[in-house]
Length: 157
Length: 157
DNA sequence: CCAAGATAATTATTGGACATAACTGTTATG
DNA sequence: CATAACAGTTATGTCCAATAATTATCTTGG
Image 1 (cartoon, rainbow over the protein chains, first blue to last red):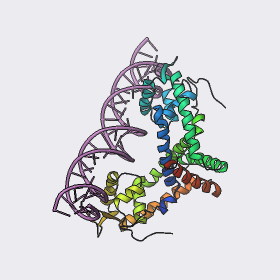
Image 2: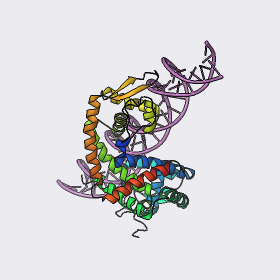
Image 3: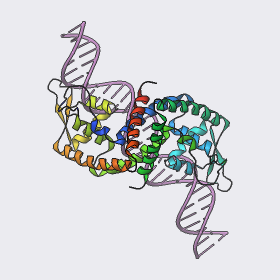
Image 4: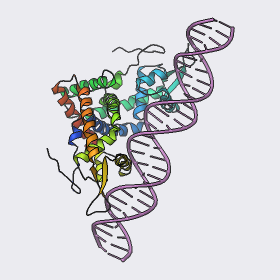
């Protein structure tokens, strides 16, 4: 344990204790990754949240806002501005739902599909760049650990 | 690949595409973990950021705000309110620095040390709970992968 | 059919986290 | 000693997400 008793003026700030926690390491790792991802998406006029929303709309054509909000873990009210943003750029449409006039069917336009595909190529590159240097076993372990943490954090305390 | 062409009204929202990205899985895992951690710290009157700051002050007694801010990846201006909060509860003090009257030496009070130790016990429990069910190899792989991602995201593109 | 309640989307307001710029006092430098 | 650099602070604005309230629609029980 390298730890000074008092460093009123000296150099590094130690975070040994915090490094012992997964959460701290995850936050730092995610912050770094996020910075790179934001830079990756910016040229496409997409943010992380709008890219995610677009991806789910592509994969679930006709999905309704409330279920999309749930899938993205945000409140319906907050999804409104996301959809506004995507609709204003004419990447998604608010279509009518035959048997329920309260709801909208979210669908991707051709332009939306195009920007999504292009952005996805960049995001895949970003993803590969992040993982570069890790062996396949390690990547697999990471995937497993993350899905484990997600499940653990959510429910069963 | 189970994927519907159109689910205007049906049930689940698929996120197969996004699941392929580390960032998406990390965000979801961290959100879940964070929710649990917030609940863990709340009884102590601590937030994630104030707990982290307190931890660094404990480990680096006498540290100055600007270096603490840097260690926490936030701007000096925003650290002020964090320190205000900790000082108001009398958990840390803004001590004088002998040879530089511009700076403060942040130090932990006895009460601060006490609440930090108690909170740390709870945080360790939280951490163990999050990791429960993962084997040691998997935990090690997670640690390694996270530190790798942190380094990858930051600099060397 | 109609009244009452539930539901879907929206709007407006708020609080937290973070950034920038400007200001005060102190230190360092030519 | 004048000027620049620096530490901390203040003020302000932005972004994101949560909450509450509003409007329109659907459902259900009488």
